Image (cartoon, rainbow, N blue to C red):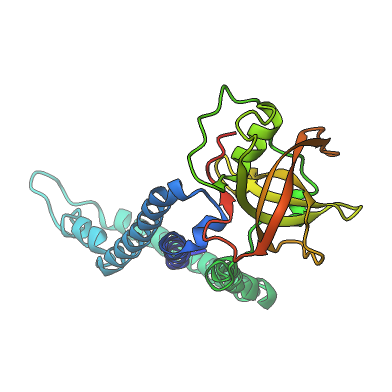
Length: 300
């Protein structure tokens, strides 16, 4: 790949990163707090591409052979010039050197002719292959176009039911719940309180939370949020089971906002034996997916 192609790929990569960072697309890949770093990376890549093109064109504008002309201007004198203090060489010696130079130049011409003949006999397939490589390298642009034109979906029920729950580390403590009825809680917060606080802070309180639906092999429903430590590559699900007044029609990956009360019912995640608490549902309604589908309050 030549310098121009490298600069083009760098520019497109930086543009794709800026496009993702300036829209909600980046939330499909990383946490919201990493947006400034993404924007900085995109600017650096675009600046690198512009600098590459500028240096390449600057080098192309430099006159070829400038250095050789500079050396030629101060070249040595020819053998025909006489230097003071030196006697001329005998004529027969000069004739001998002339014949020797003539033989040497003729040999060089024969060698150059042989090289040209060998180059002319290079297979056409090899030459075509050498010219085809830069075109093939442009296929690197296709993933960048896919990143710009196609927004990938967030991780959903398929990944959630094949990954163990992230609810494995008991927190140091829980803050007091805010006032209000019902109290709105993050799904991760409810799951932690129900699993490790034994519902002490949840008793006699109505809870409202939201997440996407996932069904196990037996058809049992779970409300899930994918929790991030850094990016989508390390996303892990936090699951709560649903019991009580569950909607009759359940579609995996659809988002629900549920209102209910704490229940002591728990189960074990079959993937990693993590605790999955339950929520006694009293009301449920479908909602739109949030702007940030991942739960950024999770710290691992």
